[in-house]
Length: 430
Image 1 (cartoon, rainbow, N blue to C red):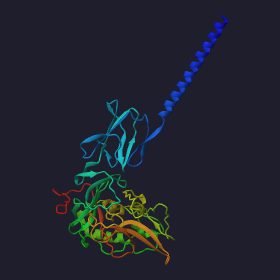
Image 2 (image 1 turned 90 degrees about the horizontal axis):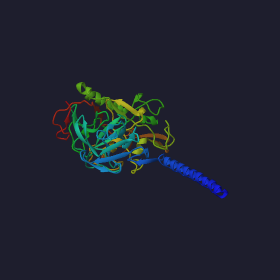
Image 3 (image 1 turned 180 degrees about the horizontal axis):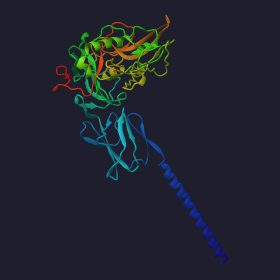
Image 4 (image 1 turned 45 degrees about the vertical axis):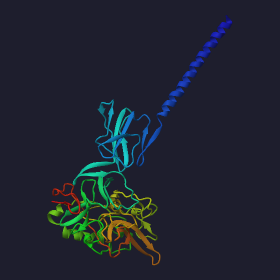
């Protein structure tokens, strides 16, 4: 009996010990399982990533289209596409649609405000038919290879316009559908801004075919960007004292001359159709440099980095701009970023894209402030388009360089019927 009693106690101890072991194992399993679903992972995108937890989505189906009509299912988010916000949706229990933020902004796919029970169906477009002031246009959302010149008609591309807070559509290469008649002159459409207004560059009294060398497309011939050059702030469209930037102050010579042309030629009812456009005179300095009013060594401006002037492998044009460099004007000049988007390349000849006119003309994008050791003088440079279609720099006091006015037409501008934007059948403003 004593032996049996000992066995009972021993059995009880074994059972209790077993229960404790099971609990420990269960606790470890639960902890491990819980830990697994706390791990944050990344979805690789065109630029950057989306952070999510493994349980965040029960299901996410994705589809892409090359023509905006026919879609095929895909397993990975595609590069060079835009999320179709009208088609994309999320549901809970396949019944009620839920509100979430699923869109593409400046090449980045954004997914926010969703829960783990949501089921999302995301549609990506490479091309989309966009309704614009010019009618419906086919827009390509792929990012072109900006390290190469554009010598053929590459069509219309879409990119996010941070100045106007919307998508901008720009023409690239030897464009044949961006001719426009306004105010008695021919213009070439650079892009449709993010607010729907039209950005134009002067092309002369008549419309010229791509590849044509003509001084008719220069509104103000042989003019210095600035008649002052001893301080680095003279790269500004305006300048004041010793400040790096100002949106008022003294007008530089380029601004004075282009304003004078505009006031003499765009008058009356035509002036009412010109929008108060936003123009970027980017005076941020390039990475690794510091702005000073009287430099003792050369420093470069931000356009030097992203235009390919620094390196042909790092071309990254943008429509973003420091708010302190955004002028609200009736007339201005083209930027180096817009030139790259149009199909130019630093120090590379291109006589076929639509901005070529066989002439030298200014941009409003600073290149550098150069300290010349031979005489301790300061030389400031701006980007210019050369007479062979390439772009590089010129001293702000340089000669033989003209101005091509850039204006913006209101987003509600009306046109005569039948215009297709070609040289022989341009859009004509009523």
